Image (cartoon, rainbow, N blue to C red; front, side, top):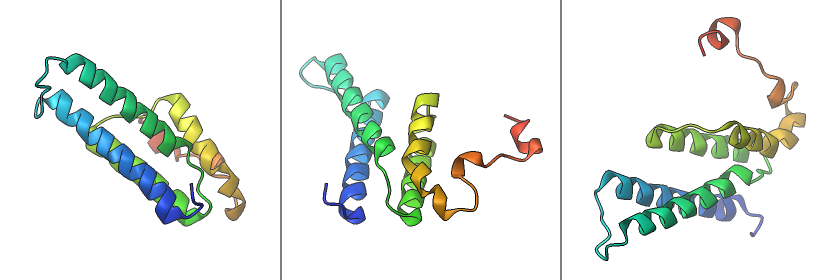
Length: 121
């Protein structure tokens, strides 16, 4: 890694986006393996997507702007892929931005939803 946001995060996010799109195409049937190894190809693609997603989740931003970009990318990914994060992934994301809490009056981890919103979940 270079320490440069544009080079580092965008490279990680681009790799993850490419892997996620490939998995979506494989699972939707829009592309098929011509060599009869469809299940194996899908298994490998899922493993690559999982590994690149873990890199996105673990990446530690150096500024509030970088943290916002990371969180925006993750939100867009979740919406497009119609998926969600498990508790471990959510904890890892929060831990990756926790060091930026000193820029806020309160820690990002201490923010609570209003009762009317949290009771709907």
